[in-house]
Image 1: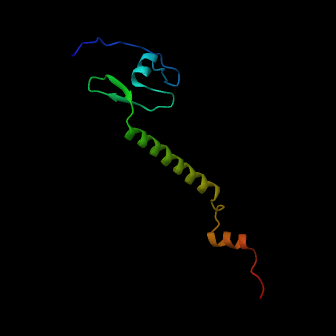
Image 2: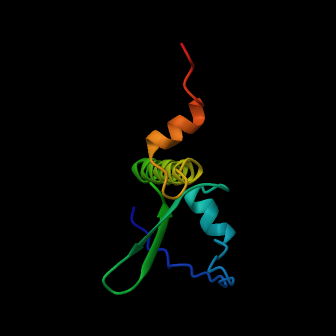
Image 3: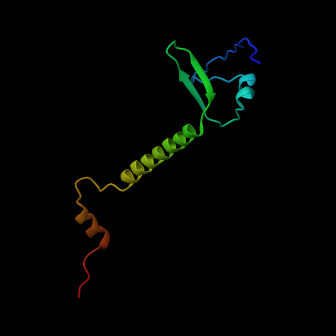
Length: 103
């Protein structure tokens, strides 16, 4: 049996950070909980569809966060371990090792 149900419209105000609260009725209908990933689809008419993200989208989101964490760790490591200006790696090794031992 196909019964036509009129669409229900909801609104939410954007914050200064461009965040909006998803109305309770929509959260309930999608089974959303805090921390869940949602998807936004922009169609050719400029309408946006909100949905629960698929497992693939969740994996992609986690992979992107992991990749950014690795990039940040590499940037920090490079900054923390940079040679002093004008010093070669050989000079740095000599400085760290100290004078050669006399035999």
